[in-house]
Image 1: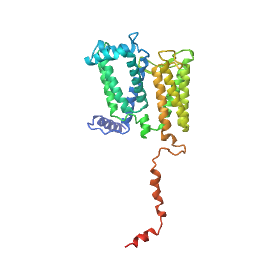
Image 2: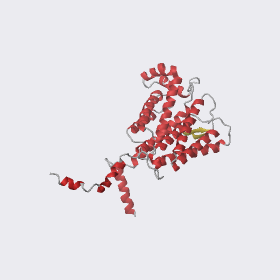
Image 3: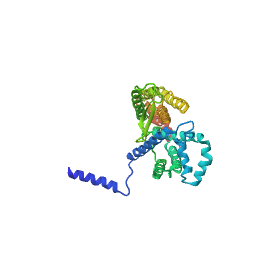
Image 4: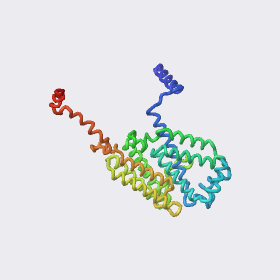
Length: 338
């Protein structure tokens, strides 16, 4: 037994020290997916404090404060000039651009949708943030170097192949599995928020799922928002378990409407669903997954339903098996030809 353990340890050590390690076709996509999800969670938390309509301009805090660091503590003088003369004078417009970009990053990375495009956007956004705050007090410049590097890796990695809609479209990820995972997320988040909202059922914003200490959050939801999450989870679960496209389409529509209602009300009035921009990003993520799962051919697998996206050349390819029934007179006719 000791000899077996020693042999196994040597093999593992040899793998770690091998200057030309073989690519692991199974482990690498999983590792890239983990990096993608971590970056998605980072952006998901980041959008929570991007508050419309002025994004902190009147109070001198929030996004406005950190953007103005580019002028107060310049990293690159041309970027400081650009911020001072072109960005700060029209800051609310800039704030909406940032909110949309970071929401898109959170949604695309978490759901594994068009990951390379998301990585390019994240690369540009990380660079812009670094140029704004890297030299500010209590900042660590290496945070932004690492953000840039992580997104650069995803530009050249197929990081959406595992638990991503890119994988569903490419056929490397089961749509059923992806749908069930996200349905579970919606149901768990909805039930937890629902239970927590019972202590104050009339709260406008609702309880937050997460904390600022590890900087991880799935948003906040009041009683109504919690119920919407639960309904979304149920619709997605029914859709993937029974291969019912209409349930998934309903889930996608409900998720989009929930997100739009939040963005229409946040900063102007107490939202009906409670929450913050992070909550809106979660609703959009659920809607996007429901949409892609509803269109995926794998949802028909195991239900006795033909795959509507099957290769149309498959049937003609199988047709030659009927060749033995060809006219037996054909051969003699050809052999008698001069």
